[in-house]
Structures are given as structure tokens and as C-alpha cells.
Image (cartoon, rainbow, N blue to C red; front, side):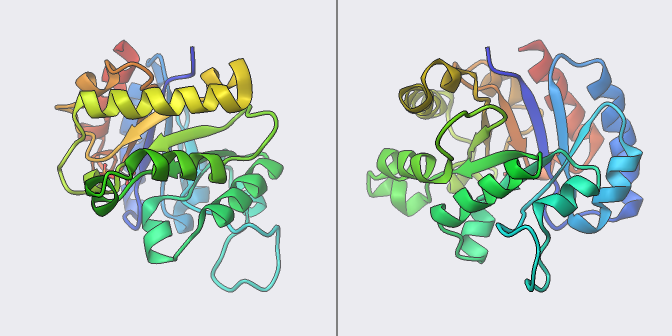
Length: 245
Ligand code: PGA
């Protein structure tokens, strides 16, 4: 069985004043039967890593190069040095806001692993792609092109339909089952038995009220949570629902 993972993406939210939320999240995470990760914004990565016991810290993006003249970017090695162990790559907001391609996401994923980070690789279709009937080719193409060849140990995949992110529109359990089933099949076809051990997270308006239903779907091994990860009062029930799933 793949590892169960509750991951929170704080996006461009949070300052040191919000580290108190980590303390409250850690209290729940410590007793839970799942891995808990929080990905705060880069300026507080080190403070978060120092602050957190019982939860893991991740970054929200990394550069594909190990160092160099890339103003404003951060490398995977810097993230590791800050005390984080995970990094989100290919989030739809990066793909949209910064035009990131699958090839760039693959390079970031490779850089992350080289630096000892576990990448959380995000894929998902837009509403227009779904309405045009292109969901499976788009998402399976993203999966194929954003993940590295060879040993998949440490990889984490998050399926996040773009139309469900931050909109309050959650995919139905049937839709999630169809997508996660297809993704699991594709991972096994590519990596063999090891592909079945890659955690497959769902993301897109996961909340305390829908988490248990989502975690009951086959091949859903956890969630990547945006808005509902900002406050312990919202995120802790999601951790608990995953722990009990
Ligand atoms: P949301 O974001 O939970 O606020 O929809 C999910 C994500 O972007 O990872």
C-alpha cells in the first residue's frame, strides 16, 4: 500500500506569525497514521522547519539548476539546507502564471531528487480541456512527461483538476475514482510493481466536510490541500480523516 500523505500548500500566504498554526497541526499529526507535510512560502521555510516536530516541511517550487544567475529563484539544495524534505513541482498555478511546461517540471523533479528532496508532482486538466473531452490524454500526457524514468522511489503525484482548485467545486468521488484508477494503471505500466507504491494525492477544494468521502475512493492515498491547510482548525480534521481512512 502506498504511504498516506496529508500535504498543505500555503501558496503566497503566511508569515512567521502563522507558525503557531504549525504547532497546532503538529499536535494532531504526531498521533496520526499518515505523513503530514506543510509547504509554507519560501521566506519562512527555515523558521517552519525549526518550529515543526511531527510534521514535514516542503517548498512550493524549485529551480532546475543547482545554482547560478537566476535572480529570485531558489535551488533544491537551498531548500534542503533550509530543513525541508519535500517540494511541490508543476503546480497548476506555476504552469499558468509562469508558463511551466512538462519538460521544465521534469527537470525540476530531477533536480529535487538529486538534492535529496521528495517531489510532489502536480498534474490536472483545465475546465476547457475537460469540456472538450480531452481530460485523459492531457493528464496522462502530463504524468508521462513530468516524471523521470528509472526507479520511482520517493515520487509523489498529486492529481488536481484545475477547475476544482480554490473554487469550492470538488470533483465527485466517481470522477476521482476514474482518474486515480487510470493514473495508477499508467504508473504500473511504466514502473512495474513499484508504480503501485507511488502515493497518489487528490487536490482541489478538499475541506473537512468532504475529506472522508474523498479518502474512501480507491487509489486516493491522501490530499494536497490549499485553502483548508492555512488554519489548524481546518487542516487537523483532514489529517484525522486520512489517518482513519
Ligand atoms: P485548494 O487548493 O485546496 O485551495 O483548492 C489546492 C491546491 O492548489 O493544491
